[in-house]
Image (cartoon, rainbow, N blue to C red; front, side, top):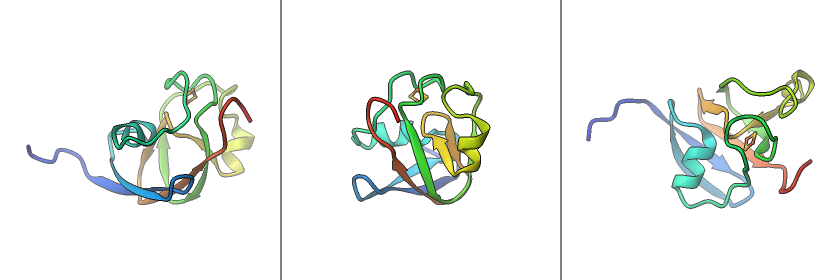
Length: 100
Ligand code: FES
C-alpha cells in the first residue's frame, strides 16, 4: 500500500514504547492501533480523559471543548491525545485515568 501521509515517531512514556503515528492520525488512534491501553472515553475532545503532557515535539490540535483542554492547560504543555496529530516526533505522558 502506498504511504499517503508522513509519519512520525511517538514515544508514550507511561508504557515506555515508541510507535509510528501518521500526520493525519491522532496520537490516540495510533496508540490504540498499536495495542496500547491509552486512557480515553469520548475520543472527540470533550471529556479530558486522554489529557496528556506533551514532553517533546509539536502537535496540531483538532477542534475540542475548552472544558477538556482550556487555553491555560495548553499553555502549560498539556494536550489531548484524541485531538492531537503529530507535526514532529513526539513524547507524551498520559496523566491518569478517571480525571485529573
Ligand atoms: S478522550 Fe475525551 S477528550 Fe480525548
